[in-house]
Length: 502
Image 1: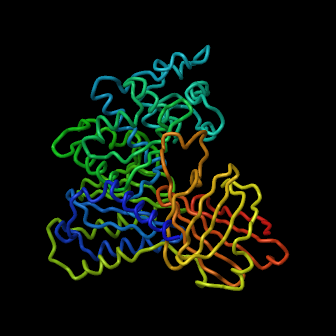
Image 2 (image 1 turned 45 degrees about the vertical axis):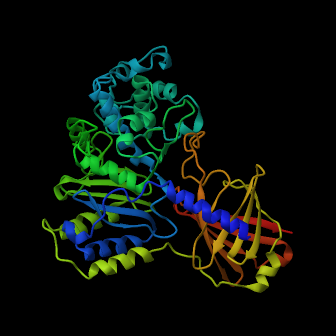
């Protein structure tokens, strides 16, 4: 066990050493006209919001980080999947390609994919342009299952009926952004991520970034970006500065203005080129499922990054920013405040909810320790579970259907992290979605004994998903265990498994 702990310790040091964090200048909030009290109220409100697990938040003003928090077990070093927030980065790649005269807004989509076109094409398909894809007005009815059904996504998209005149009807569709990613790859000879690495990320020292790929070898575009929060904050600041980073124009100001402006009637306030208009004047955002945001507020010279797993529609979170936080900002520096000391204490104390229960239950532990718990077929690929106690806490060994296994350490009133075997749970199921992500993935766990139940919370800390498990051991003498699992990524999804123990 000591050897295992030593390996974990040095692995943690290596993980932190390769993380791209603390590169943006930090300062006290008051220096930039931000009351520490306003940050405390914002962080407290978000952290306490029902149905929401906050994973990270970074607040920047005048180009400096004035506040950030990462409720345990999450931390700044972890990458996070961005879902549809990825779309805004595709728009930036399109803009750079346009800046380089590789592409035009009025280019016809069909002309890029002659080899994938149906035998006959409709007038509407022939008329569809890059602009129509950027504004989600392709005219094609969204088919969210397409990415989980087949491997020829481009051909399938182009075979769909174009039911509306392109450019007229807003219909939000991740496959439209996939087509933009495919176009970028077609005109540059590089995958969208590689193109962004060359033209954007390399100038911003962003190297810890991955992107899911399709079976066709194209970055998925509409989802799948895997990146650290501080790297997103850099992107947001460059966006706020009109495409400039450290004095270098990486994306033309003209494109930044176009992609940020209202271009279609999507959402409550309008849609740009893969960006959303906001309730607050001048604010614009990248927006992903479960609450992944890069928010840019030029009027206040503010950039906010938020990653979370939330069952809200995002309006409560954004409402706190528009109605409470931004109005509290000053145009001038503020006097030093004792609230800053409280803010620092708060930031270091936030943690996600721990499992209910006590540290020990010797009677129950004797009944299950070291015994094989067989789990019926499930979405996680688990076949057998073994529970055991160690001096660091509990250990849950998972044996998967493919024969791989790993042991997840579980802390009491604390989180213990370990590398998992395979992939974390995901709320969507695109074919071969792991391609392009690299890995490995990590999970942090905690436990509590409650009457006849052993409760476990698992957070996949460099992903998005979390599992909340309760092992009902009341029938263990009869060789039965009931496992109940809920999660933070599929609303109202509770699974119950009748397991056997021997």
